[in-house]
Length: 169
Image (cartoon, rainbow, N blue to C red; front, side, top):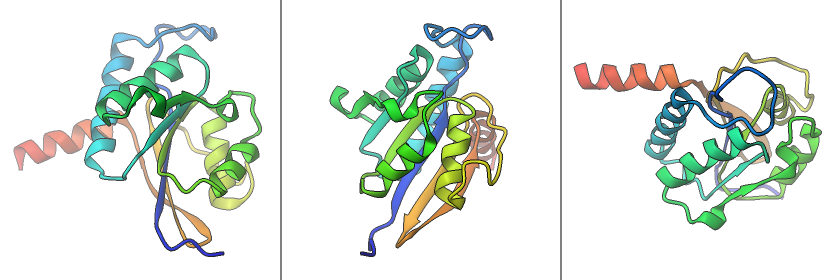
């Protein structure tokens, strides 16, 4: 069955945490909170019709998702943890769930999972291509009909540069 409407999924790496040590309880740094807010503003302006934000259970991912949800004016029930975004989860599970879910969503996770999920959606293989995503960078994919296509890859620095260009031009 073909889908008539365009669906948007934003795959996003969590914003910058307080240190580079591996710890599931690391909160966002001051810079990370700024990154999350900047990306949240860009997503809101993109008019993608986002109705839900999902994240892994790690604190840095949850805090990124909460910042997005606040800026997108989503109710707390629309911001939730999703086991399919755990750093060691099989990206095919999330991809399969997205196939049957018609909603426009933001998924906040970790590397290499976010990169592998994008690869599964776009190429059917978790290692077909690699992306070097910095903190709070996003991969926007859209589904029209039966195929996912890459719409854009954007990072907080890109959003900041676009904002500065629009103010000066």
